[in-house]
Amino acid sequence: MSTLTKPNHIGRKISRIRELRDMKQEALAQAMGISQQTISAIENSETIDEEKLAEVAKALGVTVEAIKNFSDEAAINYFNNIYDNDISGTILNAPQSNHCSFNPLDKVMELVDENKKLYERLLQAEKDKLEYLEKLLKEK
Image (cartoon, rainbow, N blue to C red; front, side, top):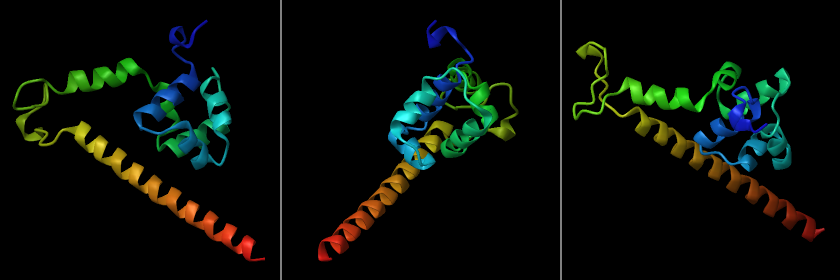
């Protein structure tokens, strides 16, 4: 049976959250200290033990419950139902005092960009360390 017909396929939920966070399997693997192949196996698994799920959740920056309860439909409906499409951008069924003065998707994208830049700096630092160690080895 395909993962599309299994709403509780935990690996697929992990994969979708990772994709929404604009994270590659390699980045998640590095954050967890495991191989990309292991991440692939996790994402293809229908179930995962609680300890490993907690590690994945931490690396993704979400809660275990967020992974367990994730659904594409809920994520889409959240954004479709909360904000109406008029020019004023008011929140549906909310008093005017709670008017949202920014687009939440823009804020999410800013966070994604910040995380991407941080990851790139960390990756460059690791490359620099590796280059330095290789240089030391050649000198011996």
